[in-house]
Amino acid sequence: MNQSLTTLSRCQPLLGTYVSIELSAEIEFDELIRISTIGFEAITSIQDLMSYHDTDSELTRINSKAHITPIELNPHTEKVIDFAIQIAKKTNGIFDPAVAPQLVKQDLLPQHNFSPAPESSWRNIRIQDHHISCSKPTHIDLGGIAKGYAVDHAFSIMRDEFLKFNIKQPHININAGGDLIDSHWKNKRIEIRHPDTGIPYRSIEMTNTAVATSSECYQEKNKHPIINPINSDTLKLNKSISIFSHSCMVSDALTKVYALSPESTIHKEYLAHPIIITGNEKPDEYI
Amino acid sequence: MSSNTNNLSRRKMLITSIFTSLSFLSISRTAHAKQFLSTSQAKAILLGKKKTTKMNITLTSAEAKQIKKLSKVRVRHKKINAYKTSSGEWLIFDQVIGKHENIDVAFALTNRGKIKGIEILAYRETYGHEVRNKKWRQQFHGKGPEKRLKLDREIKNISGATLSCSHITDAVNRTTQMWKLVLSKK
Image 1: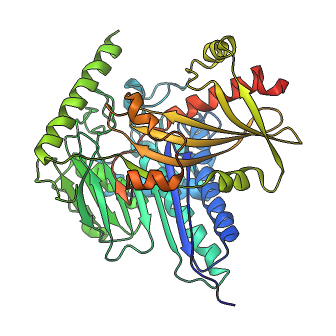
Image 2: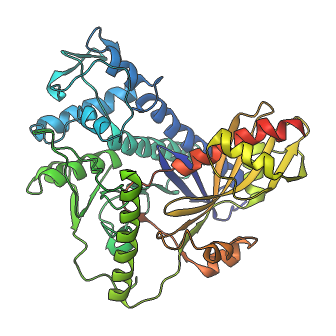
């Protein structure tokens, strides 16, 4: 019996923002509900592991104890920290997952009762045999890349669920604010918000399945989440930086690199495509 | 004090920049909106096939004041859109007004008043001036999803910055305090 195309859109507050999952396939509606629930649970599981805010997360255990004793890593956490160190190495520290103390100072992250780590950096982090250790107290914040990874992970898990029904090309779209992934990205456009007002401003053709955008359009005045790890200065980001790539985790990390180092060529290594919008361009007519 | 001043100047700046942008664009715009689940779909997802009873609950002024005191969140509507299962679970439909968002949301509570699940039903973007405008908000009350989508321009694939969902957290606190004070006794 032929099943007609069914569509479902759900949205839940996760990862500190609103995460929407949109699915479309020739499958029963109840199956779409079940698969989307698996997607949300996948995101929740990553949030539970890598939340800086959560005092029970694996990341909090790492931040409080990895300088005392090696901590065994969940494979997901290992992948994300390993990737963060990889980008830190490639950018010579322009990207650094150990800038949490500067974010705590701005109240962008909560103050935990950790021992202080003002001079620590990614160079103090070591992963060996699936264990992490830090040569001095180091406060890691995986922030955007953990969010990007959560989106990638949910996307991959839901695609596998569809495969069980022999559905090879379901439409899967996940949007978590700054991180978006769409299985049917070809010939599709996305709208980029104005870096100041947040109003959808430019329509851009997608050049890959995932895109992440960094801007300060929702930030409170005098709070700047991008920190220059070299001198600990905050960066007042007066533009929006979008990166297209094969994964939200890669895209999210590269937005931070391009914010601090616009001349970087790291996108070539990841076959990524940066788009910078200053807000001074002529707006698209559709708006 | 300085934070309030900052917020105020930020709002003024935001409104100014919006009007500057809009006059620059010379276009009148409506809100962006996205419809997710219908109330019956949300009910099915959050409570399964359990039978529910519609509960007529209107908070007294004293209850609303006490809920605000305990949750530190204002009670916007005294009339509560609530359903209860025979095993004591609750489903509450509420509206959350944030800094940039106006959201219809469903909360499911266990029979011990713990949050069991949250589903966003509809999301409308606002740009500072709209969200504080009562008339603008009222256009959405009591309207079905079809009407909303006709009113608004549907959100599709927008990429920007991460918008905090802290107003949902506030609404969760308000809902759980309401359960303790009122719903648990029904």
